[in-house]
Image (cartoon, rainbow, N blue to C red):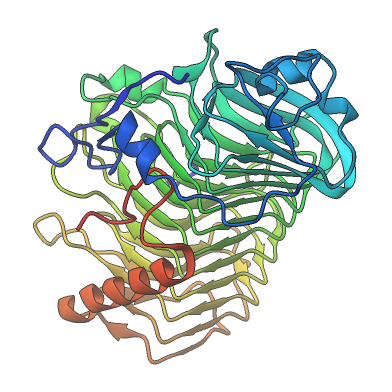
Length: 432
């Protein structure tokens, strides 16, 4: 951050952050429970769909339900995936599908999806370049990889021109059981999802990312994160580093490892800075309806977390609306050197500390370039708009605890109505 910021049965017990033997990150189900909790993909399966079975499939088979292809990694190695025509649907049956690395362009998207009530596993997913790939209902983790690796668990569009790459209704995690993790384990954990530097119009929706270093990073243009849960991470939850990013209806919660533990990263729930440079102009980013909660219960290695921390601009034509930010930090919603941006109807509130650290809504500056912003109808512990001499500010009200808690409840209800009360693995977006 940049501050001022197999089927193999496993037990998803998580980090123990709520003081029990289950994680504060809501991943506290065993594998059978996770499988049972999966939401079947309600889209009908086409009659000409290709089936992949890592247990009984054969590369010489026609790919029908009765005679399927092998698992995804083996299908790729046999050259079969490259032969799939536009618009085809591939249906993954239960089991271990290996580590998938592939590319290709499809004007009509190819769908790779879980079979109804199935839970296909991947050890890693790397769609290096291409267009027209929609992936649904996958569980992806190095826990399912036959080989060790470091870095991101999912990469989309990092190695070449890419567009219309979509991951939906999936689960991504570094390790299931973090109850014995040390500070070093948290700091060296895999990161979740990278929307790569050569992409345009990539998306992640209704996906659960947990027990990671960084959660989801947008380094692609005009890309979207919607309805996701990012929890139990040790660095930043979401990063937006390119123009046109859209971050809507996500829940980001439960940060671990602080400066005092030896981690110099200043953690943010959502952070923005210019990709590969740091300070520089970023344009047309939208953040709407997200929930940020510093932590639930009593986590291992608790840390302070900045909420929406956008410190390195100029930031031009940003929209930051209807976000509910509960953090143990001064920076609730902070935009530095913002120009022509809207900050409307956000909540910045703390449940923690002894009352000395209270989050604000702020227009800040490093370059003395803040100008022409609209800041209305926010509630926070305090407000500071001095960096923008031309700000249009009104009806920004000091927060009352009951109002903040009700806004959190209302925002959660809205997200659950739009995206479902739980994620694919049965995890709730917030602890009951």
